Structure formats: structure tokens, C-alpha cells
Image (cartoon, rainbow, N blue to C red; front, side):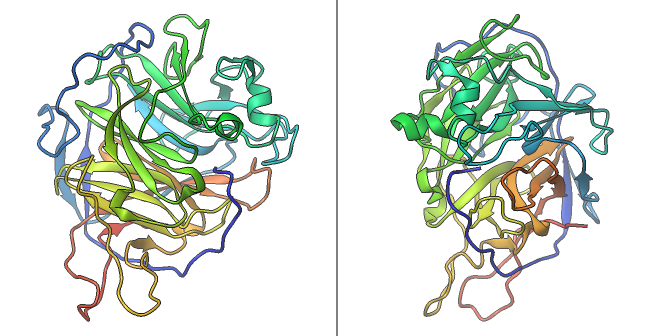
Length: 401
């Protein structure tokens, strides 16, 4: 979540398109803790950077997988990853009584749940680190940083250094703390080294425990964010800037604990409140697809989802506009008018299939009972330009049921 006030939803637009499934390998190993050393950067993050043959195979299919509804798990603004044969869901917890933007609210922490399949059963969430432990940046507890003003801490995103950087298999946790920005205009992001995919994370943990305030020049603010991953390529953080008025992209460094400064500001020239970003690399069409909540709002039960595309990660982004007197310029970039009744949070790719993660918010300050929907995504290029007088069908498909 960001710290902006809710705004109304928009009219629903849907499109049904041909689907494809990608298959990718994910694997895990162990390794040393985070390092801030930065060797010469490889030329990655572009469409020309190839995959090892074992990583990806594209297969056309007649239909997308069935959406998956995850109920009764107190994890929100989640991402889901698969390491070895286990699925890990990371998210914010509310069950201890957290109230968004209520000063002095208890902060429940960031948690992880595991399952043998996306359908579950999911274990009870366990904390990735102690909410009462020290926040090394502010020199107070995380409980005070995240709960003291009610601003919270959100969006736990776990990545593994496999196939890029030091290639040592270390698990690295990112999350944001809006109070860091409101207190001092420092970026809101935090990075911890973890003992494994289920934690624990942070200083004092064995092995690999560490904390780092990332150095970021393109994503130097406060807002929702996602991490775009691609085999054998450094990940990138995609972030909404203060006020959620635009999306920026920045490449992560060798250790995955900061940025390199390589990136793009104001993706596709977009203005307006956009948040909840995520994306994936489409091997079939050789391009990146970025999705986001369009427009952004707080705990909304039904916001439009928009998209942008590029053949390279750090340049060339575009999203369709509109024409006409007073026409909303975001209308054609929306591929879902209500996001299945929830709000887009990010994208994850599991076994080659991209999934849009959607929080089915209840619209209240304590979202313990809000469920999570995984909606399958596909991308099929379409023709058409604003003002050509033909029917417009968005190229991104996302069934809700």
C-alpha cells in the first residue's frame, strides 16, 4: 500500500485472447551474505540477452490455467515463488490488530507461508523477522517504524541470486517502510539477507543474515513496487514514485541489495496515480510486459489494471493512448476494468506461467480477512491505433474465473 487516499474505480474493459504458457526452471543453493561490491556490469536486461536453452520453452495452448483463489491466509500484498518443489507466499500480516494509518497500531510483521502446490494447503504464516527487532536505519524498532504512525511496512519480495550477480544462491528480501521517506525523504526500501527461502532474515541470522539500506537513484522515493526477474539476467525494481504519479525502473546491482542507476524514468510517459506494478518477460514475443493498478487507491475493491510493453527493459516503453476531446488517455492501456473485484499487486512467474496477484480488499483498515486471487496472464500482440475507427482489443488477457 501507499499512503495516498482512496480514489474511485473505473469502468470495466475486458478482452479475450489466445494464450501461451512458458516453462522456466527455478532452483536454490546456499551461499554467503549480501555484499555491496560491484564488479563491472554485464550487458543484460535487453531482448538480445539470451537464456540458457534449459530455462525456457514456449508452447501454444488453447486456454489459460484456472484462476486460483487463496482464502483464509493472513498474508496480503503478496508475491509467490517456487523454490525446488515448494511454493512460498510472502506478504504483510494484519491478524494482530494492525490498522492502516492509525497511530500506535500494532504491526504484525512480514510473513511467509508454504504449500506443496499453488492450490495449497498453505501453512500458517511465520514471521520473516521479529517485528520488535531493531530497524538499523532509524535506530528504533521495526514495530515503531511500521506501526508507530500506522503507515505500515509492505510488499515483501524475495529474490534469489541464481544465474546473475555473484550467483551464490543467497536469498534476499526486499520490503518498503513508508515512514523512512516521510521522516527524512530517504527512499523507503530495505534489504535483508536470509538464511533460506522461509527466513529468518536480517542482522544476526546464520547464515547470510544482513541489512542494507539500498542506494537507488531512479527508484529514490516511496511507493508500491515490484521486482521483474528473468533467467540469467539481473532483476529490476519497478516502483511508483511519491504520490504514485509515475512508474520508474532501475536495475539491481551485483549483490541484489541496491541499484546501479541504469533504468528508465516515467515508464511510457504515464501520468496519474498508478501503483501495484509487476511484470514479466515474454519469450514468445520477445518483450517485457508491465502491469499495474490503473489508477491507484487505498484498499479498493475493484480497480482497473493497465499495461505497458517494451522489447528492452530500460528503454522503449509504450502504452496505447487515446484521442478525442476530453478522452481519458489511459482508456486503451486498461485490460481489465475491475481487476476481478480487487487491486493488482504484482506479477509472479511460476513454472513459466505469469500470474497477476490481486488483493481482494474489503476496504477497511484491518484487512486480515481479505483473500488473494492468482489470475493467469497472457500476451498476444494486436493491431490498432487510437482513432483508426476499429474495435480495440487489449493484448493482455486475464480471466477472473
